[in-house]
Image 1 (cartoon, rainbow, N blue to C red):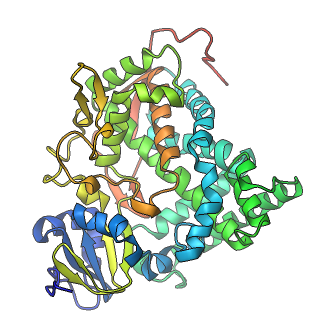
Image 2: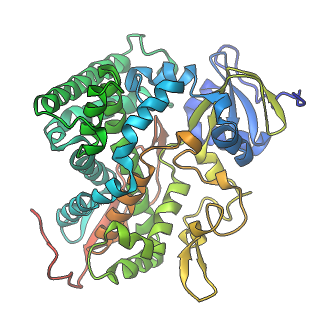
Image 3: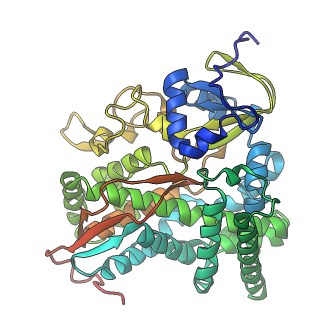
Length: 472
């Protein structure tokens, strides 16, 4: 290996390392260290050597070009193993390949498109539940919406009756991994109040999933995962044919239940918040979707570049997943530095997405940056040319869903869900800001600390008379 220089060491306290700085403001810590020390910089958590990676070229090397030299590693397993077990997110090697092969049919393009009706129907119900002029907490509403979509599309409507179990588990998970608490860095087995509550509620969630699986098995599920109607059916069929054991089945169901509705809810929250605060572009999106004549289908989304830009810009500015983790299985060269094997690499979408080297005015919501005019004068979204947006920037300057072979398997589902929800809502309501500044916490995901409030004003123009205007 030619590179022998170690990345810059940002210092820290004895024993604690940089834990106190991360607990104070994890996202700000990442931004500051990247700005001061560059795209690859060391930090320390209770003696665990870690590296913050914000160089898009190095991120592409880790996720794509040399992905087989990196694994999720021990740190994510130690922190998230109790939550996600041996499911797809943490599995490695052949176990990961077998699970992804068994599950992927649930996320084929045609299957995801078939979920569009549920996404639109649930968004209609959400809009119809808002009285004209009501102040709405869009984080709470988005969480309810995403859960309902997940229940109908992926895990079956039976999960609806367990909504309180899921909500309690989600709250305990958020509390357990809130980086503002020093206790979030301690092992799960320590009997802190947050850990006890977390284990108790997670046990209840797993028991719920096992009960749903037993019901599916009693109902004579299909033998072929590709013939199942939803993700839970796919998982049960995969287990019946031996591609998953029962533990992996439950672990994957928990993974998709938590990750599937949590990240989508956050993406929708931030998209609606940003559009409420940007009335000119909100009007542009509304005009675009109103011109469709009815609520959009997945096929219609190709004709909605402004809608797509609005969602992508929200994912840039407020990526629901603020960090991805990898460990090199051997010494590697990253960004001109020598990085040893078995150290924690933190790949930070939050920091890269807000880096002025790649984005003009990076802390401002500017969806126009994703749009361009063709030679024929047509406005299109920038993702029909190489790169993540209009202009010259590295590919991995935007990676809200990760990248490479281990990118989020639900990426197509989530992007469709966000665009259909925003379009359906904005056909019915105009949003005005009430919450004027977001306060965020870095837990497992990038979450708002409190309610995210907007005012929902019913639009005067009539909808297509053939559409249901009220499903209550």
